[in-house]
Length: 185
Image (cartoon, rainbow, N blue to C red):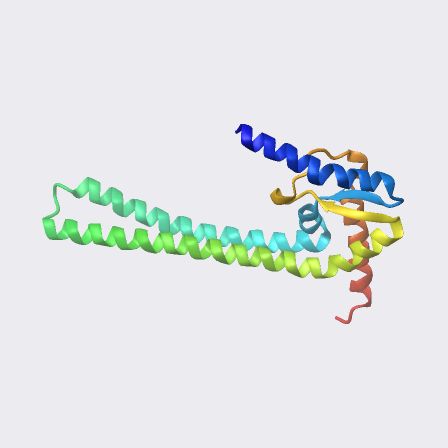
């Protein structure tokens, strides 16, 4: 634990403080954005994630139904253990095991599918968002935009005055509305 704290301290001195010093000595600004929040909260993101949530709910209901069937079979095995012959118990146990294995596969497949859909949503919106963010940065004289939404890019302190997420969401939504008005239907 102490080694980790010392390592983080060195990281802070080696990486963060030079960036802060550079930002203070330059004419540009350093701002923080919560990139994931921009993707999820812009109008296009809200629409895409609402549809995604519907897909998740549908799949969850299907999995819940299968899980209930599995629970019923398990209950049946426990309740009828004394009245079933060995062959019937074995057949029921194998049926339960097969359904349990299939349930686990279905859950894993659903998780992979949902991860792929989420990544696709992020990628699709990011392609349109990048140029808007670059234009905003140039217009505002920003030297660096730091993404505070990723665990690997931790930020130890953020002055709320430099948070631009809400402002950028509004600008991005306005740009999308303009693109939508001029895009052929």
